[in-house]
Length: 259
Image (cartoon, rainbow, N blue to C red; front, side, top):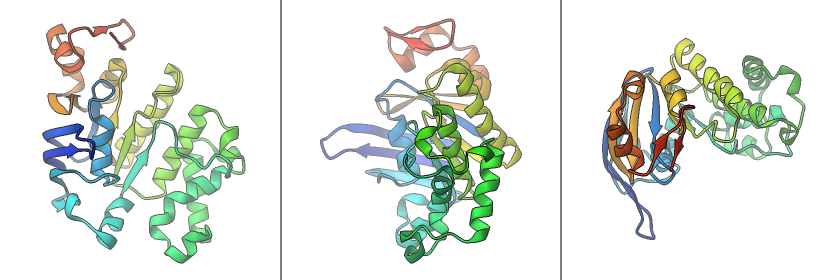
């Protein structure tokens, strides 16, 4: 279980990105975080895997305080937390296989990692991960030769290389069309259900939230303003919607937000 307690993040310029945030993510949940751009969604995910350090509060994962982890202990924690990014974060000139193998760096000695040396077992693991996301034939292609949807699937395969117990996905379908969005979220749902991997994912489109989430939280200006399930999203009143997205926001028939 992931437990966030009174989490606050204030950046050096004084921006309060998160303030006194507390919630729980049950084991094996598919948690979706909703809210406008600037609401704190990305900051929250980056605090969970310690890409940035929170100002106050604690993040407990299976009883261990992630926020207190340092050095080798932090390295061990990060091994089990995969990260998927909106802009894919691939080395565009490298091959698909090399990009996927980079997900194994947490298990490789620092000396070998400097020269991208990976064992035959790791290379076989990478090929299996690519097969799982349907990219076997692209293994030797450069990453920048792939479509956006294919690049995001490479990102999923890279996360799989960590043998994760949790995957954090920061707006993973924001740059994709609706068909590809369902393809990517379907891959994450499969990992959630079949591999029992907890998923914490930030999204904008409420129709996708209704389809894939088991649990939902809503952020507004760094504050927690909603907790519920996908059914609560389906039955959300206009008043509750505006609590999250503001008085000027409107829901469209396709489940997106305007305003």
